[in-house]
Image (tube, rainbow, N blue to C red; front, side):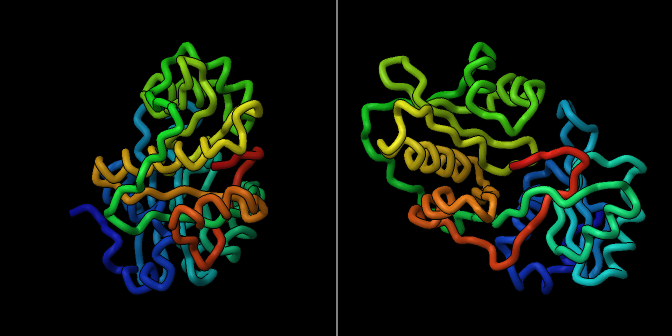
Length: 247
């Protein structure tokens, strides 16, 4: 019988927003539990054709013993692991050469009520692969192959004014919302908030709990999320990586 996260429910309930990437991956069926115990869990993302790595991982461990137990079940050469407690980082660095990447707050929309969409004369629709060049020109935190994969799978959405692209947002391969960019000429017009609202409502319509990760030093993005009613995690998560990667 497949493992689930029931055994660590008590730990997850201490900061449920912080662990949304684990719980949502399992609930949506895009991740499976590799191991779980009362003090931690390791979840693997089932990407299928995700381009940059065969499998991604997210883990939490409340003590070093649990962190060692979970790390022992990782493949020999992992590329990127989301870590929810800082104590796991030295273990992953020693065993795999992974370094601490960006630190993030996790934010979640915990209501089932959709957000109102302001009328700015914009339409939001999926972006086709034809927009690869424009997206890559404005979003520097993902490889072109990754952006191409998202476009091919209909996971990037653009805000258009009279058929002119003004900005975009997307869903990452593991299910988090992100990739939010508004082109310089269209900033301070409420477009970022509109895109965030639109994708939140799309996620709700698909039965998901909308969530995303924001760098701890990105004050404008944190302010936007909170102004819309997103709840921030109490704790901080980290990206353990061999390269500079980000949500």
